[in-house]
Image 1 (cartoon, rainbow, N blue to C red):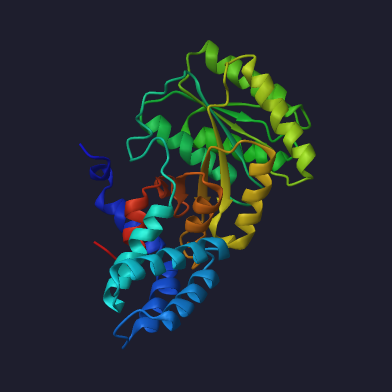
Image 2: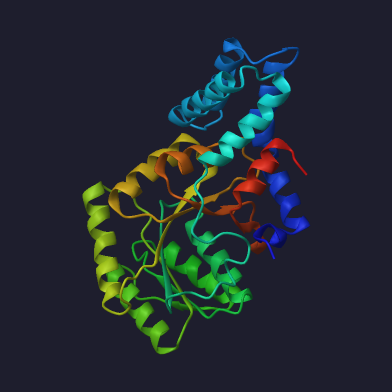
Length: 318
């Protein structure tokens, strides 16, 4: 069974609805640009470049897309306005980085390492703890035993929120008193998970963008301590970004990728925002796959990212 066959009608409709403002922001503008034009000329490309840049795709990625379209025009000698949408769709899909594991069967996949350890990073307010709770829900629904580690010990609210999610989803949460060493919490979490033969461990880390050196040192310490329990942990470093913040998400990605080796992205709050173009730019610029997208508050509203379905939704394809 192909990976796209797992993409249910309800999830596709949710994706279409959630990306509707981004679609209107980008592609309704493109439609107006090419209206009445018999061919894609330099003026159309200039206008297209402006639309992409102002839609939070990012300057470098927008210029790359325009250059690719120009190359297609030079190769094919002629591209009309009707063909522009198809060409644009193909080039955007090409820029999106593929994750190593794709499709909605990700949560059902048998981890190569047990426990499979995911360290989650990101600033406060991006939906980091909520994303962890939803991940725990999906993994548990897939039959996995999940442990959560409340290693954001600098904020009582973060620990309490994770405890609420753990109770709601029905998974174990390991915590210590406020101000405890985050690495110690990670150590305890992995030790308990290993002892109880858990499948998945998700570690919440402090959501502070203090200076890069301190951030790097803190995350490195957590990783080193975890490896005393589970060699090669963490197996994933998941950076959570708020898609509705547009260019701020780029800056956060820059800070965290400089501080640690980020292996995957979760981009939240794409429902109700016109800034979904940020998914394209961040994936292209940082060469890090988008693994999950957040499309609402419900437990089911965290989806495994599927670039084909994402681009189809932006272009209105059924």
